[in-house]
Every structure is written in structure tokens, then in C-alpha cells.
Amino acid sequence: MARSIGDEAIKPLLRALDDTPVHVKQLAEMFRKHGSKQHRNTSEVQNLDSPDVVHPLKDGWKKDGPTPNQVVDAGKGNRPDPEDYLDKDYIQQHLAQFENGATRIYRTNSLLDWGPGNNQVPGNTTNTAYVFPTDQLNNLMDQVNSPKELAEALGLPTDFFEGGDVQLRDFGPDELAGLRVPSGNEGGTDVEHWIPGGYLPSGIPEAVIDIPHDATGWRNGDGVLDQSRWPGSWRELNL
Image (tube, rainbow, N blue to C red; front, side, top):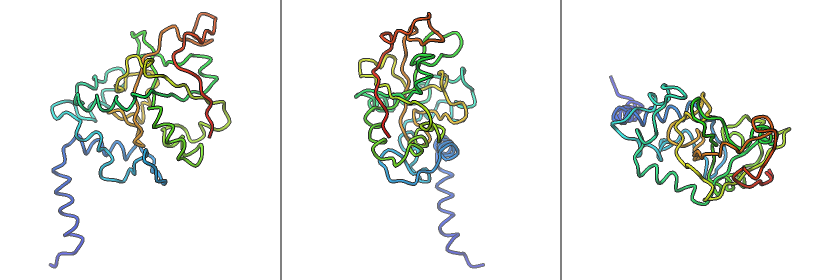
């Protein structure tokens, strides 16, 4: 039987995939499963059909640690420390993206009610916040064409920036207490879409910082809204 051109093209590809480390295949599947395809040309959002979608991660994952599936399947509160499965150099390079500061996006009502931190897992009194590199977030906001596109790139509901008062909070380099790669155990973790390694499904880097326990809001504080306890500075979000 004659061999088709398709056979000649597909078989080498399948052989190459068979040789790919299991963690790379698992990460690629996670990115493709949880990522929404982006149809714009930006330097910050990766094409999720690209073979190098997990490029920042594929060489930084330890070969003798837990696999991506094992990390995710352990469940929130039981996931290992990223140092157990990520190389030290990868972690340092990832966190270096935040050297100019970090930013989080808040709904104003929620911020006033609860303060800038999310409650940690039971038994840990330290509050946390997921943040993006300020300079990369600013670049992304300059490139998107609509609030919906920004929400999609950041893994937020598509209507997140519509019909509500939303603001930015910038944390300077000296306010990034406990800056680290997320473990997936932190308060505010998206249990359905979280991917180990410090990236959103759209390719945006993220990290976690500690928020002082007394940086509270109206509903979880001592009856006094004292924003002087809050790290970071307010910035209006213009889209």
C-alpha cells in the first residue's frame, strides 16, 4: 500500500511527542484546556496553539519531583511547595519579573469590605494576594482593545470590568513581602483553572505576596476602616 504524505508528516510528529517528558505534555494539556484562545498580536499573551506555550516552564520543571497532574490533583491546601518541583534558577528568573513592583486588580466594594488580602488556608493567619508584574500589566492594558479582552487575558469573568467600580493597587518593590511562586494553596486560588508554575493559562506571569493580618476592611476588621494599614497605593483603572 502506498504511503500518503500525511503518514510521512504525522509519524515523525508522534515519535517526537512520545519522546517529550511527561511533565511537558501535562503542562501543555493544562494550558490548552484552561486557556481561552487569544486573537490579537501582543507580546504578553501567547498563542495557546503554539508548540512552545509552556516554554518558560518546560526547562524549569524538575525531572525527579511530582508531575503537574500530581501537584494539581493534591488539591488546595495539600499541594507541595513549588521548590519541590521547580528549579531554583527558574524560580529566581520568574520572580525577577516583579523587580519593578506588582499590581492587583480589585473590585472596590470587595476591597473596602475585606481589605487587600485573601484569607489563607485554615491554620495559617497570613493573608495573601495574587499579583501581576506592574510593567507587564501596564503593557497589556495598552494593547487590548476592550475591557472584555483584558478580562480574558487575566483569567477573569468576561464582564468583570463592566458595571462595577474596579481599581488597581500598586505594590512597590519594598512592599512585596513574601514574594513567591504560587503553590495553589493560597486564598483566592482559582481551583478550576489554576496551573502550577506561576503563569495564567493566557501566559501572564503571576506571583503571591503576603498581606499584613491587620490590613482589613469593614466586614473582617475591628470596626474601623484604617487604610493606612494597607500596603500599596490606589490607582484608577482606565480602559
